[in-house]
Length: 233
Length: 269
Image (cartoon, rainbow over all chains, first blue to last red):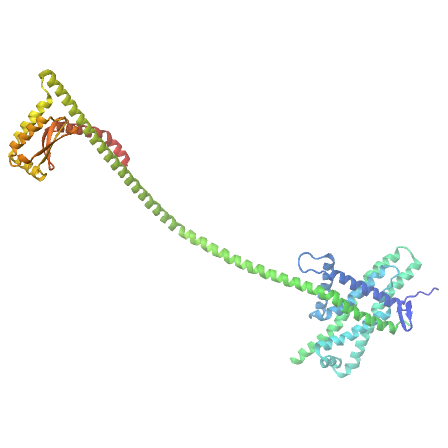
């Protein structure tokens, strides 16, 4: 049986001493470049009056949609979370959508990437929590309702990070793998349908990842608020 | 190995960089533009609300004004009616006074014309009568009117009352003894001497100082007159003509009033 390379980390494109550029990093850079350059193209001549350009309209709808989602989930001002959560969504969604381009391997199909994003969320949750509620208040939530719960809370924190990473990786990797397998069984038409399904899955995964991240961040601050409110009463 | 720590660290850095880039190139400008537009919309709505309020105020003010005007309309109309009536009366008064003035002028003119006409008529009648008398006398009796007139004049002088003579004497003295003889025809020297003698006879107190001069006066028509210091003594056809003139004037008056009455009534109205 032929071995199918499904981990883009293993495809080394360039190496110099310890510095190497694998497919994951390369395609991440590509997505980063596309996003940054596209944003720059549109936002360099924004207008706040008269008719909006089509692209400005698209970006406004996108940013506004993300803002609304954040507000809905967190019931807070979306301002501080927009950059982080929004970038998670846009990056994952773009990475997944471009997967229809032949020769492109989405960076999200690498567990390293999804793990990196999950670690970012893992770090962001306490960062936002502490920034909002203060260190003492944030740490106190790990011993709620009693000190016995401390290990379970910590495990819960870690496990949900792991789940976040594996969920995205599993979905994206499976999409790629399924297409690869189908190509060997039914090389015509069917893989196209799977690709379309992959687009949908990719967008849903991006949405799920961003929303979950937001939920974790929001719960980190909201939990304290409700506790504090109870204490005050 | 499914997890590559090298890649993970690289990807974390990549993600951080992407967050920074997108914050700078995407979220910042877009949010700013949206906020700006929102502010502008709010501003416009506030402006519109303000303008609407102003317009409402203005419309209320206009409505109030219109109501006031409506209320004052009757008053204004009444005043205008009174003013118009007053103006009409004034114009009528002016027209009447103009008419009166014109009428008076016309009447003055008429009087003047009539006087001129009557005087002329009287003169001509006198002349005509004299001419006929002169001719009749000359043709039928072989005597001259002038001679008869002169003789009659002297006779009249002689028959003057003492009172008349006294008054004439006083006038002669006051005019420094100058006496003027007026006649329609020229008087000869001999006749003058005769008159002077007669005067000396009649006025013995002043007779010697008298300075007699003769003057021709066509208005006298037929007759003679002595004048001194504004006092006159004489005889002419005038006395006869006075009666005739009176009759002519009466007839003219009857004729004019008879023709003018309806006209006067018309213009008065």
